[in-house]
Image (cartoon, rainbow, N blue to C red; front, side, top):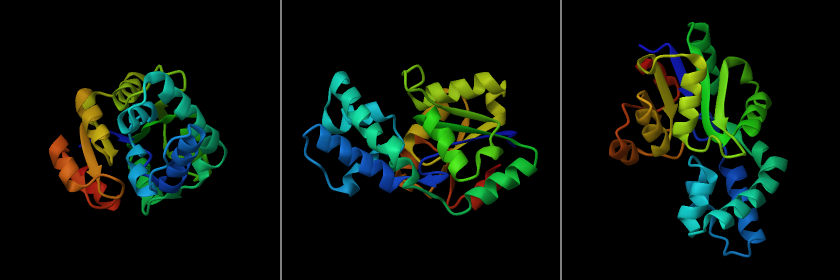
Length: 212
């Protein structure tokens, strides 16, 4: 059905819970703000960092930028490797690549860090294009990233599908005219997927194949 498969990173291919939440805790401490329990910080996995600092803590743009800079102090040094591959990641990527499909990354994580993580886990070879956000803010939202991928692959939207785990993936996919397979391996649940209209729901990464 689909010739080009786009993948979200955090919560879809890797579980970044410890590294991301450690980074947020570091930023809150540097900002002299109340440090919330780790469980309450998992909302930072998926959405653009600045947006979530503003939504979660009511920060203005300037304060959110400062908090994001403090977050990256920690994350760029050690948080990125406080991470693990989700079960079945390598197997799925290899099988799809070997079937002749084109694979692209589509993540809200900054491009330099996304590449570093793919290389760390030995899965960079499976992707023909890495679509990610940019530190200068020129690509910020999931929609921005997906448009970048479509523009740089010349793939028709109807031939593409995005695999992701949060509402931002579903919203972004639909805004650029592609379908979304929502997987239950990350931080979204069936209620969220139903609310935002996921086209397909997969229990595991192995189950993704039945929709492709």
